[in-house]
Length: 449
Image 1 (cartoon, rainbow, N blue to C red):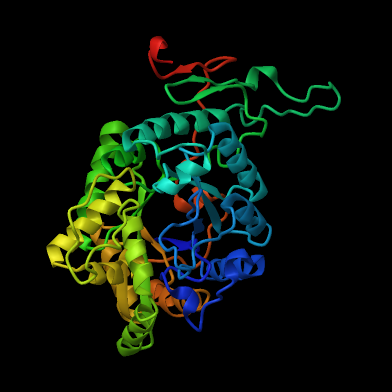
Image 2 (cartoon, rainbow, N blue to C red):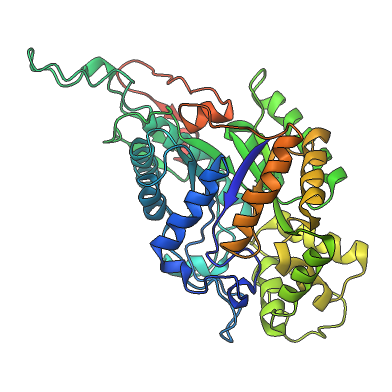
């Protein structure tokens, strides 16, 4: 079982976590807080730390109740954590819509060198309309266009990582030859959305390519995952749906990449756990009571694609919704939940602010371990991205009480394997495909470029 520590929100994954007595309310800008969290995750043998990111302030609350308005930039933060950790992977999110391939390739290659092969990239197209205005756009690009760009972006980044062969830098002091010119390759990538011509000025990463994570579950997102992801982070709250999702993605990968290993599938999980089920339920309800209604409604609208729900009856049903360019797969999940269970807006936001559509498990330590084991053994998941509701306390509890029970069940490791994150996850190291001195990768007809 592969486990990630989802530490994107410094106070915890629950929307009102910052108000809880066990939370560090001012941890979002505190490096010591993140150093402690990373040390705890590494003590527990988590495979990686995972930082989600969006290039804008979360606009799910304008009344001052939301605790996710500030955060540290993930590449900088994880590079700092690389200096105080040894084995745990470090996965940063970068948007393909609001960054450029050369910068992202350079940042990830650098982080892979700094961490000695522990870097990963969570590839997203961004779902927040507010991000567009931060980058001089009047509106968020269309969903289809974002994924067209994402496919080109991924190809450009991987080509840049292959600019230098592994043994290109000979550094022979006697002959005065620093590098072998025949092992230097200049990508020439001309696409509809992306143009890159020129080598990366960082040596090939220790992993060849840092681990690539894909977090979209729409049809274009699944196509991208099947084509190029090593790991897929997904929101699945029901095991039959998760089994179907995993089976479908594995079949899709086989069609696109015959005989290739399919991506590892990791649903998010938010565990509310304690020594007894009664205590776990009390903790869940205590957090639920801390959600301010205006914040809950705002979060629900944000998850539905930046919609304003403030004018609707909070105890009435979810209305028919206009089209949005936001996260399509998350929106479908929410609409299905509201329809299938007959939930009001209030009931819906109470459900979603707990885990934002991911799997929620409430129970004692054994019940949480049993649920995770069942999902793993059923083929619904290769592991989980664990989202502690309150930090640091719930991460401590998970490491001290749930992980030993997973080991007792024979589904989680006793020690780290040596080597890179790829090696620890059982992933192959990509072989660079070079086309002579220069690479030429034309992905669109000449007239479209």
